[in-house]
View 1 (cartoon, rainbow, N blue to C red):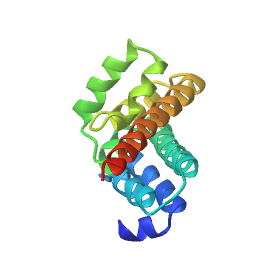
View 2: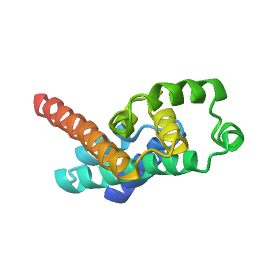
View 3: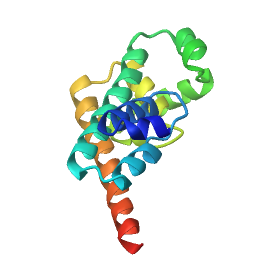
Length: 149
């Protein structure tokens, strides 16, 4: 993770993208390191949000491929959990993409929305807003804690 911190804003973008895919990765660690190293607030916010949004949309697009077997094999996602999430999302609508930032279920929501061919514009806007809110809250937390020391 240190090398990503050394890359600054690009490192934040890469870490955020990877964290939004099915890879177990924490973008918050890299974002915090870059912020504490003195990086500017808004470029970090933009890099983190865009990276995480594009990573989340990649899960949506993988779901659109419609091959549960591929999702199981390559993404290591459990078929039963995918199907359960699809049933849950089916009745809620495209705006559920707002919650893709949630750990543990976010990737499943994104894949399910893609598989169900949810409205891409509503998915994209909802997902972007959820991701932006996530990083705004995290960055405000980092600044509050930083000011305490």
